[in-house]
Image (cartoon, rainbow, N blue to C red; front, side, top):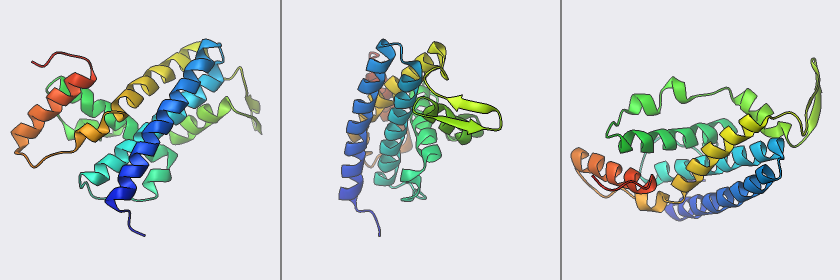
Length: 188
């Protein structure tokens, strides 16, 4: 079943709302010094922001995004990191797609899955019992919170990213202006 524009807009908007809710939950857990739970919820918020970015990419006509991508933890987390890199590069007036979509933005999905789930349950592995409340440090949780806050803030602005038909130089200027607004900078 093909996704319609209306489906993608609805999913993008619902993903953003869910990302905001998950981030708020993560913030409450973090304030309560519940590092593992905060990390897990922050990681889920990042994934929801990534899902919104994937929907956005499909809405503006980028090929190759499938329904399976929208449910893959790895694809959603990578997409959120690509969204962040895109805005960072545009704010610095550097827009290099190889860097945005390059290997250095990939990560070990298995490791991320363990870390995300570690705060929610314990398991028995060949190394013994893993996971639980003490499995994530304050520094790990803090790093996750920063990424989640940036990803969610950017995802909230995705409706503004509807690309009009423009020449490449105009698109680059538009991206710089948009990213500056997202990062709270004055237009240059």
